[in-house]
Image (tube, rainbow, N blue to C red; front, side, top):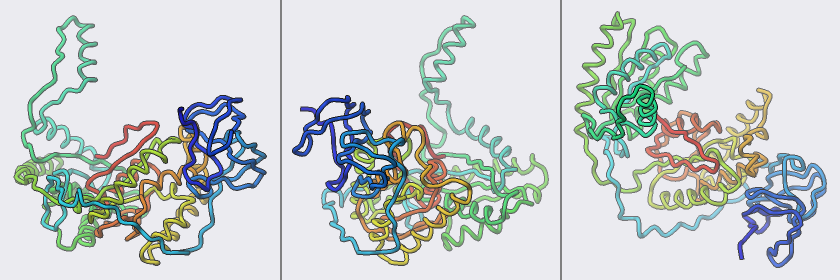
Length: 463
């Protein structure tokens, strides 16, 4: 018989519909017959008890909302009868023990990575180009065009071939349906280009935050070196960026080529110098080859986006199991998106090894929530229309499922946006819920891989 309902935690008073339910059908569940009162789409929840207005709704064993009107047992839980509600938290109430998973079968496993002088190991070998200020974006775009044309042989994808076929059908030309099989000039190095809209024109603190983020990108184990363009007069001065690099890694030894346009003179002179110097550096970085490294050298960002009502009971817990195993092997994992940890603060505070980290987590959450409220919004407005349509109707419900990516291991550190993570174990990183801003922060904090779960589907990537 097909299973139609599931409770995530024994203490829950709602159940998840695993299939579409029809009003009037009776479902045998946990030793009783449940009469479905409303058509309920799969991924949504139905009440397992009668609710009065104000009654708390529990899922994952935590409060995820409260009834805004009477809800009969068997009726659907929806935005029309439920409001956001989360548990209050004041500080650490207990220390949660952790059963370390058995990782014997993986303890001798390795991956082939790029070893850096500071002991980090990358899963990629990348040369970065980026500006210190948005004024240099045009020059970055010029460099991107010439380097990609010369260093990266054209790799035609299916969409390009489709467009060519459509164009040829109009012109009468013969179709070319085969993809290019040529290889890149340098096989061991990728060249990537970053643009942004910061570095000047805003408050000085923004420039300092950007400096830390860019410095984190350079220090990331996936990066072999970087070419950095400065206009000269911007808020984010070269010295600020260099100080941020030294703060993250006082002994950093990667090649970082920095050019100041106003000091050099003309665009032509600067770009000619950049091209010659960068080509020589990229050629040298291409000599770095992959070598075996233990799994403890992995730092993995745990991300979700386009989530639905099944994400928190399928993909996210799976990622949580992986996180626990990697931590047991001596690796590092990062959980972020603080607006999507609303309602599970108590569990996370209790998992902090150091009480100071627990307090810092609460302080960051309170600061973030106040900032959101001051802007005229609130954490309760976090779920997107897609989330709600597919069963995540409150922020606390969405958060409870999102937090499952973090498994059950102890929290060894709590970090703010732009801070670099140097310790092994499970960590928290304060970021927005925006997927692009979040993955950017994870990479800037040292993640050499980001695992991204999704329910509805999303094409989000990271440069």
